[in-house]
Length: 109
Image (cartoon, rainbow, N blue to C red; front, top):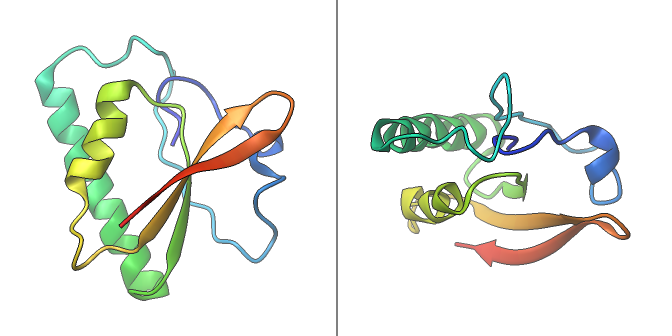
């Protein structure tokens, strides 16, 4: 999920292998300042919900999602608010550290 910055495969290659399906959720010009109003936050929730539904449809309800993010804090909070505990998959959220690559920092659901 590249909204604040780009996330190229070299940043997450330490955390996944070729057995994973990759879904990219990004904007054309990632920037920490892209989020300007409430409408964009609502639009994010709508698009993220569509993505979660698509992943569940394609991989089943027991699929585990590994989420690599470059997002503003408000989007990170909205990710948690968008989840439906009785419906959505387990999501492992990762943060990028230059010396270590992507490191799992929290599990949702």
